Length: 209
Image (tube, rainbow, N blue to C red):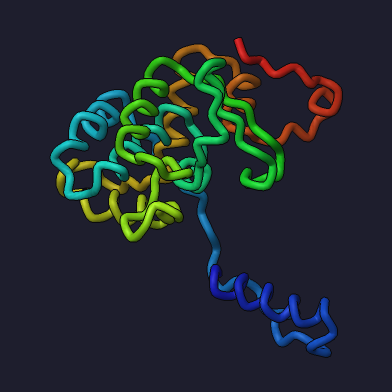
């Protein structure tokens, strides 16, 4: 399905620029049905994940990135590609610009004491890089989002958590918020999901508190 999607984009790029006259993919449907993942880590599994990180075979940067992903409930790419310029550590806010968010909407994330503690560790590790998680090949570029997927996949046996991927941390954070009694509206704000209802058009309150 991903290959078909990529090929369609390549051919459409050519069509839009009059490089090609037609695309062979017009009537080709995705070859397989997709089932959305629904894996949610329980409180005990989250503790196993968190406390087991020191014993994993991955870089300290990857460990901290995974912790920040869970602590902020942001998308994997938004975490690993984050720059220090997005953080106001006096106001304790992380502002993700629209060009970096999946839905093109800026997101303002108030930072918890846990997140602030992680950022302190991340800063000590990242040094003078503009990025929170600079690539080990040079601090002018960040690590890639796929690096976290590989880090988790390669350490599944260490945790003993079946069917667990880095994508599941965001879903687990959202589910944990619901369990704690956080309203869905506030959770949706944190996750930066687009509100397509009438209220979403007129309600511009940030819900920082």
